Every structure is written in structure tokens, then in C-alpha cells.
Image 1 (cartoon, protein in one colour):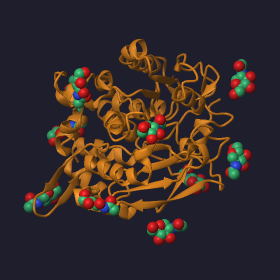
Image 2: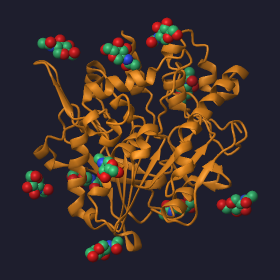
Image 3: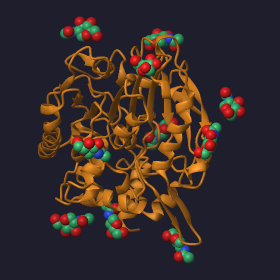
Length: 414
Ligand SMILES: *[C@@H]1O[C@H](CO)[C@@H](O)[C@H](O)[C@H]1NC(C)=O
Ligand SMILES: *[C@@H]1O[C@H](CO)[C@@H](O)[C@H](O)[C@H]1NC(C)=O
Ligand SMILES: *[C@@H]1O[C@H](CO)[C@@H](O)[C@H](O)[C@H]1NC(C)=O
Ligand SMILES: *[C@@H]1O[C@H](CO)[C@@H](O)[C@H](O)[C@H]1NC(C)=O
Ligand SMILES: *[C@@H]1O[C@H](CO)[C@@H](O)[C@H](O)[C@H]1NC(C)=O
Ligand SMILES: *[C@@H]1O[C@H](CO)[C@@H](O)[C@H](O)[C@H]1NC(C)=O
Ligand SMILES: *[C@@H]1O[C@H](CO)[C@@H](O)[C@H](O)[C@H]1NC(C)=O
Ligand SMILES: *[C@@H]1O[C@H](CO)[C@@H](O)[C@H](O)[C@H]1NC(C)=O
Ligand SMILES: *[C@@H]1O[C@H](CO)[C@@H](O)[C@H](O)[C@H]1NC(C)=O
Ligand SMILES: *[C@@H]1O[C@H](CO)[C@@H](O)[C@H](O)[C@H]1NC(C)=O
């Protein structure tokens, strides 16, 4: 198996999103809506199935406000990995569950989600493998793949506009992981569909993927994204001002380069030790062939002092990449905490729960709400690991934890 394929498969199996949450049986489940009209613009999932979303209607004061949340789930950057993906719920609506749990920022419970619970809330399903930004096709006569993420985005917006989105008073475009990356890619475009007097903002959770070198000093993530953007035809859908200014146009897929060109207010939520980035950008398997990092990847308490130093270096690299944003963004928001986690907005126990992560005693739900509604400036940067005792440090991502058997993903270390 080639390294690239292995890497892609790891990305596929290491589902980088907050699927696991409290098994509360009071959780809202929302029915799937297939976008029948998507075929009119050739907007298909990898396998040719119709794209979909889940909509829970707003009420009362939130009835004309809209939250759109992109689903995450890694990427596929080779024909082989995309063909595999097309046979799963990450590449086809045929394999998706009809009913989707809505929790965290999508919850309808006012005490768990005080600022957005009564908005129209939409979860946009991810089935294209390129953060809703590809526009291409692979067809060699025996295999066919639709790389139509950009069209899926358009088809879903066109479907939602007549359902009330076109009259939105307030709007927020969110998403986590690959969905958090999609937020950066589509933020300004989202605003163009809405009336100029609509309050439009964007919120990226765990989408600030760094253009960082791995521990062997290779630009593994850059190579990964280069393959992704060329396979799926992403470059044409990125911000033109960015692609014409940066040295390599495809670099604009990294939020740190795209951010200065985004005009719509953005809130960036990320942990400085993002587990996905740790396992795939800083220490991909290709850079640690002997598995020296395996224990540290599973449990930060088992990292050696040298490994902790390297992780602290990654944190500083992230803060450095955000420096421009921190200093010059007037309307932006930031929450960089120091937990080992990935995606914190879609699960009750990291969004607003009594023991959820906090920085300066603010939960993520409070920070995002304060920023959206302009209640205060929100630029929170946590002290370095291990100072934060509010973390739920994530362990045992499948890709690095070979004995993972599907049960315990989270461990409370404190
Ligand atoms: C979900 O939607 C489908 C198709 O729109 C419908 O047939 C089904 O009854 C709905 N299920 C629930 C539980 O609402
Ligand atoms: C479907 O798309 C066609 C062509 O763009 C458009 O004329 C029609 O109004 C759409 N129908 C719905 C139900 O959105
Ligand atoms: C809303 O959340 C609170 C706090 O978690 C919980 O006590 C309450 O039962 C929930 N309400 C509903 C209707 O689920
Ligand atoms: C088409 O591509 C698939 C996947 O790469 C490959 O298995 C197949 O052999 C190719 N078919 C032809 C006719 O080249
Ligand atoms: C925006 O302007 C339109 C037309 O003047 C008006 O109907 C609508 O209520 C306004 N929306 C907001 C959020 O002010
Ligand atoms: C990473 O860099 C090393 C040298 O530092 C090189 O030998 C190796 O082939 C590179 N690996 C990849 C996957 O590019
Ligand atoms: C990118 O694609 C090239 C050529 O197919 C392959 O050799 C390389 O391993 C891929 N890199 C990544 C990180 O996917
Ligand atoms: C590029 O920048 C110019 C000048 O700021 C602006 O007018 C234009 O809308 C931008 N284009 C895009 C695609 O963002
Ligand atoms: C932290 O916030 C909670 C409310 O969320 C409050 O009850 C508590 O007093 C605050 N603690 C400090 C030290 O400010
Ligand atoms: C796997 O999970 C089950 C619970 O589903 C547990 O009983 C079992 O001990 C676990 N096996 C291992 C090897 O961890």
C-alpha cells in the first residue's frame, strides 16, 4: 500500500469529529432532507447520490435566525481513497443515518445552548471528501467519482433560501474539522447569498489546520492538501485574492493564508494541541515509523519531556499563525484552549456542560455567544499544557490506538 493511500485511509478511519457525546436519551434527533433539485446543477456525493441536510426549525425570537453547520470527517485525496469513501456514509447519503442527533451548538435546549437553541439549525451532510470545495469528476470508463462539493454547497443554499434563509435576520456559518475548514472556504460566499442588512458571521471549530512541518521536517500536510486540491479541483473555488497573491495558489486552503482575505467576521475555536493535527500534521505515521510517539498520542500524561517540548512548539506555531488575526481583527473572535481534543462545539460536554472546558472561566458556548451578539470582545488564549484542569483530554483515536475497540474514546485525566 502506498504511503499516500495509507495516509488517506487513516484520515478516513480517524473520524475527526465529536460523534461521541453523553448518551442522553433526551437528545433531539432530526430527520434528513435529500436535496432533490441538486441534480439540476450536477451536485452529487462521491458515489452519485443526492446530497442532504437536516433542518430543525427555529421558533419565537429565533424564528428568522439561521445556523448552518458543516459536518466534518477528513478528506480523500486519491482516487483509491475516494472510491473507498464512496461506499461509506462519508461519501454517500445512501449509507447515512436518516436521523441525526443535534447537540452542543445544534441543541434545542435553552439551558444547554442559550444563544442558538431557537434558531433554524441546519446540519449540512459531508459526502464530497474535499470540504465542500471540489468541482471535478473522475471517470475512466470503469470507475466514476463525483467531486462536486462546491456544487453541493450551492445546491443546499439554493434549497434553503426559499425556506426562510433568504430573509434571515441573523446568520452563522459553522462547522467542525473538515467542516471547520469549509467555513473558511465559504464564509464570504455565504454572505453574498444574504441581504446586506443580515448579520452574517462564521464560526470554525477545529478547522485551523496549520501549514506546519512534521517531526521529520517534511511538509506532509502541504503534500496531502496539494493532492487533494488537484484531484478534486479545489483551487478554482478558493478566494481569488488569496490564490493570486500567495506563492502557491493551493496554499490558500490553509486558513492561516486565507484568513486575511476573509471580510466576514470569523470566530476561530481550536485547541493548541488539536489531536487530529497532532496525529496527522505534527506526527503522522510516516514521520514516526517505529511508533515512538504511540503512547504519547494516546495519553498526553505519557509523553516524554522532549515530546512535550515539541507539542509546545506546535502550540507556539499555531499562536504565531494567528498573530495577525489577534492583532488586527476588529470583529473576530478566538478561543484557543490547551486540551487534547478535536471538535468541541457539537457535544454537550465540551460546549456548555457544567464540567466543560473553560478559559478565563468562560465555556465555549459563552465565548461564541458573547462574540456573536457583541456582548464583549472574545479573544481567549489558554495557558500552555498542563495548566488547564477543565480539559477532557481525548485519547485513543483509531489511527494510532491499534487496540481501540470502539468503546472508550474520552478519558478524564484530571
Ligand atoms: C423522515 O423523512 C422521510 C422522508 O421525508 C419520511 O418518509 C419519514 O417519515 C420521516 N421520518 C420521521 C421520523 O419523521
Ligand atoms: C429546481 O431547479 C430548477 C433549475 O434551477 C428551478 O427552475 C426550480 O425552481 C428548482 N425547484 C425547486 C423546488 O427548488
Ligand atoms: C435541558 O438541559 C437541562 C440541563 O442539561 C436538563 O436538565 C433538562 O432536562 C433539559 N431539558 C429537556 C427538555 O431535555
Ligand atoms: C479506473 O480506475 C480504477 C481506480 O484507479 C482502476 O482500478 C481501473 O483499473 C481503471 N480502469 C481503467 C480502464 O483504466
Ligand atoms: C433588511 O431590509 C429589508 C428591506 O428593507 C427589511 O424588510 C428587513 O426587515 C431588514 N432586515 C433586518 C435584519 O433589518
Ligand atoms: C521526510 O524527510 C526525510 C529526511 O528528513 C526523508 O528521508 C523522507 O523520505 C521524508 N519522508 C517523506 C514521506 O517525505
Ligand atoms: C501525493 O500524491 C503523490 C503522487 O500520487 C504521492 O506520491 C504522495 O505520497 C501523496 N502525498 C500525500 C501526503 O498524500
Ligand atoms: C478582492 O479584494 C478586493 C479589494 O479589497 C475586493 O473588492 C474584492 O471583492 C475581493 N475579491 C474577492 C473574490 O474576495
Ligand atoms: C465561573 O463562572 C461561574 C458561572 O458560569 C460562576 O458561578 C463562578 O463564580 C465563576 N468563577 C470564578 C472564579 O469567577
Ligand atoms: C471492548 O469493549 C467491550 C465493551 O463493548 C468490553 O467489554 C471489552 O472488555 C473491550 N475489550 C477490550 C480488549 O478492551
